[in-house]
Structures are given as structure tokens and as C-alpha cells.
Length: 318
Image (cartoon, rainbow, N blue to C red):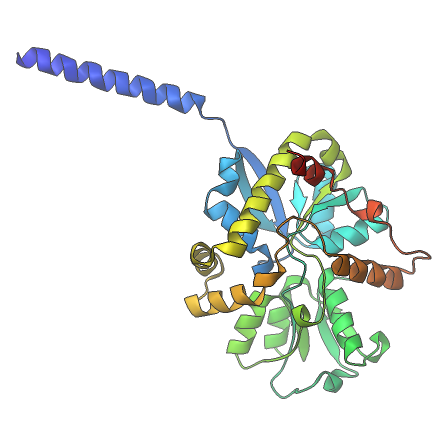
């Protein structure tokens, strides 16, 4: 009897192993999805959420999220080493210069950036004649910096910009610049160290950020892959915008924030999410007006020079 029971157990184990092996073989291999950010920021929350909560995985992707500065990211898009770049403004201006890239969706329609200064500086006017911390020429950070200064009455020739890339917070805290435009996460760190917020971009500027920029070649050749990537990103945006209780732990872990700080920066951008993946009319007008002015374009940019929402259109018909 004992031998019979042992044999039954052995057979059951063998069947279990066989079924497990068959299930494993049926599981599709995840496709790496390479997404580059200009910096780690609250504006990338939907990508962190999509990765942490397994949303991208449910669409067959293994997301690889990295930080790249504009020139490196654009070059990687064109060589096919990168699927997407999330710096919407940078990708827009590259497209207008003739680089074969397009914006295929956006994530937010208001930027989370702020103009932050040393505590002894109490107004933007005091920055006249100073050297301010920027990112790179024609990057979104610099566009925001110039616009915030303009709205306070300062022309670009009344100050200088030192482009230090992702080291803006470091340059500010080291005293190398008296002020810099920081993203929402960097602003939290700076305020904790006694620095002062002079202006918040989201209060006065509509501008699309956190989108998916892709090469024209990849958009043509990888449509099925990119369609699923857009679906995963849209689902991530909707969860980010509506399920705060699931998002805060992701922010706390990803960005090393306290619950209080995570909630604060979540609330700051809560109304900015582009639930349909498209820019608002105001965001597009602001971007194109700035681009025409700063790039010396004879005519306003045309949407088809920058955007390709054909995959969004296809998804909308389903």
C-alpha cells in the first residue's frame, strides 16, 4: 500500500512539473522597451507606475527606463537603440530642424518645473545680470526658464544661462548659480535645504511634457509594437491620475520620498495628465509660438511637422 501511495505521489509531481513546464513554454517572451527620460522627475510618474505595477508587462514589455541628455537620446532614437524619448519639447524642436522624429503621444499638459533661487533672493528682478542654471540650448527646461523670466519683465539679453544638464540642483546648492529651473522632485529637495521658489511653471504655462517621441523609421516599421506601447502608457496615465493610493508607494520607492512629499508633488500635477494622450490647444500654441520665435521660423510650425497621432487615432476606432 505504501509503495502504491508513493507511486501516486510521484506521478502527481511529474504531472505538475510537466504542466508547469508547458505553461512556462506558453508564456511569451517579454520585449525590452527602452524609454529614456531627460531626468528622474514627477513628470515621469506614469512610466514608473506602468513598470512597478506590471502594466507594461501585461502588454508584453519589459520596460527599461534610463536617463539621457537630449543629443544622446536623439542619436539613440535614430540608430534604433532607443524606442522612445519622453522630452516632448526637445523632440519637437528636433523635428522642426528636420530630424526624422515625431511626437506620438503626450503625458501631461502642464510642466512640473519651478524657478528656484538662493534664499536671499526674493524676486525674479534680482536675477537681472546673473548667470542662471539651464539644461541644454533649446531644451524644455531652457524654454521654461526664458518664459518665466519674460513674464516677469526680463529679456534674454538681461541675464545669462549656464547649461549644466542634469546637474542644475548641484550647481544651485554649490553656489555656482544663484537660481535655476528645477523639476518638481529637485524642487522638493531644494526647498528642504532652504532655497526659495520664485515661480512655478504649472501656474502660468500650458506645455506638453512626458510624452513618447519616436523616430519616423521606427514608427513605420514597428507599428504593432508601438501601438501596444501607447496602450500601456495610456493605461498607466489613467491609473496615475485616478488611483493616488496605488501611485504614492511607487513615488516613495522610486524617488526616495516621504509619504508627505510624494503626496505634495502628486497633487501639484494631478490636473495636468493628458488622459487621451493628446496636447491641449493651449499647450500646442505655446510650444509653437516659442519655437517660431526662438528658432527664427518664418511661419508658425504645422502640426504634421511635429506630431503623428495615427496610432492614437487607430486605437480610438477600436
